[in-house]
Image (tube, rainbow, N blue to C red; front, side, top):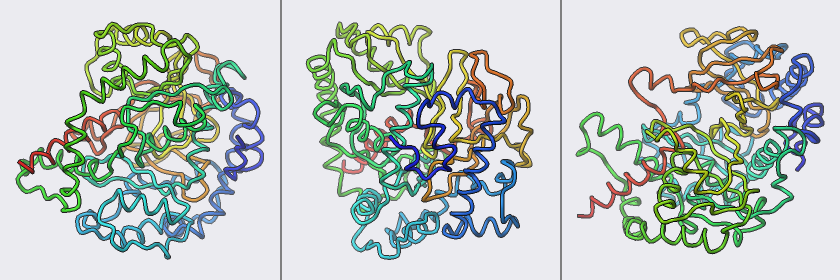
Length: 473
């Protein structure tokens, strides 16, 4: 994997090509000059080719970046990637949605043919077919999904960065090299779709497992529908307002009810098949497994009830994250999970769809950012950047230095506590910026939630399908 392929500043790329884990042990005097050089390169290259960034820079009167903090006024609010009118989706105006997306990427989408498209899923698939984009969608409770203009080159790069972190986080070569040591991959999820998880898992099947014949998905042939994810958000809003009777569903989505009904009817059978296949094909083998804790617990609970214990080999690898996502899990949920799986080696990450390089969690419970990401903590009231010395709590903002076809700077909706931008080390011994484990949405603290998290997305997806099927009765 060549990180230089991401067109990073040569100094940062060279640093990360060998021992990726060294990035978590760098002194500030070495790390920040490399980040600043990469950031200045990114800004100079993108300000003239991404309309939204150029306008923002002009409004802020910024022509250059001389300190890392100078970029803060140029960080997009996390809502910018869903700043299109919802009417574009409701009215099927995918020509206008494409023009909106065109203003957020360096790629020229003026020749894209949107004729005949009437669903988000079809729009994404045609972008895949006609352009270099591989758009990522998030999950929004308003029904307005965020669309990130990732390219086809970004998914394998993100997968490779994840593999490097796993290999080197506890020391160079301390973990398995998933890009070399091929092993079966298992995921209790969808194989197809345009969420960051679906795209990432499809690529992991290729790069970690060596192909789909060595990968097992709960839904191997079904597409995780962006249209249903959008509907899930609108259902939540309508329920909160007591307006379910006024909810409008597009004819194109209603026409797919038979497809969703068939999947709903086979859900129990699909789960039985998944367990049987996991046991028959991969029992005792070292595997790569990806799932968030709540889904893992549901899987383990079901498996233990079926008498399945110690299912996989001791050299297996689990990647996970996200905490309990508001679900009440028993105190021993991890013990049950590992009893079922048969191994305990796992890597927990802080990440989000908007971020290409995630932050692994250390033995002290903190999430450590690699030098590819520059984190900031902002005053939640003023938006001002809090000092980069010491420990501060506020709104998390991130500058992702990896993507070269869109601007990777954004302000999140997360309230976090950040330490380590100076040289004060973590209890684990690593240096550099790190998040404390208490992370929550600002909107949750204010009585609402503007985003369905990744762990909740499948459940919301299923509820939306149930609602669609009710319309046929």
